Length: 342
Image (cartoon, rainbow, N blue to C red):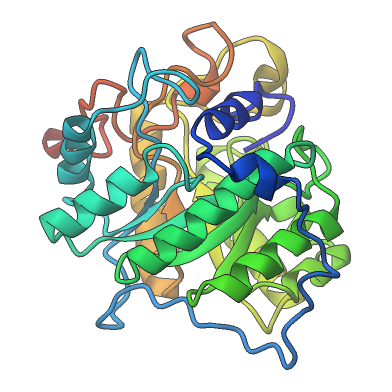
């Protein structure tokens, strides 16, 4: 997503990670990850992003945040029963999930997937912030442990989210991020990536970071980039092609793309967003993207499964609250409503 917007996580997530930190983590956190401590693998052999154990492409991929009304990172978390309810809904449409951190609800989610035998796989996140090595350490340790404990479920680990693009409000120095990428990759057997905006991955400077990861995770939102619905898919395809051409040695996975159902008429979103939001428009874009992904045999994580009303500013029309294909109360929007052909 885009800077200037009230951050999806930022300080809230860091508070969550610190609160969840196990005893002794503070001491470990003082040992800052660095490139010097974790040299690059030589030769570097990219690990394949195996989406399913039977090597078939996934039925679909989606970004997942679990927080319902009254819940948020750093505050009340979803119950096990609520996570299980979410998995029942998610499992009808997708078998590959992306989550953004390794702390909090992550272990409960992975445990339920195993317990219920759903055959889902998860791209696990490691939230990285330049100014909080204690929280970073907690995330790294959690991800390494979960990848080892749930090898049949954790398909990949994404270290850092939108830390390099110029507009991000939680940027990290590239060297700082690479240290964590190298450490995680040295300690897990699954492929490791980092997620960032197309407007970073399309720059030659991104080659330095691309050389450290197994595949590229690309964010590309037509709506935030001033596109109308009828040009959205062509724009997405073009940005993907540009990034793929710049990084021919890496698979490009689309880690976020979507269409919001509401936009506030003030602030940056009112200035940048030109396309019409709405459920009908979201359904059209979702259906087009799913068909395109299948034709291209490219993994596309749709953003996102559920509305989360803790996000963004206080106004109820704030765009950050309205990317879900389901509402926060788990009722389906048009894209998922059988009565609408979803």
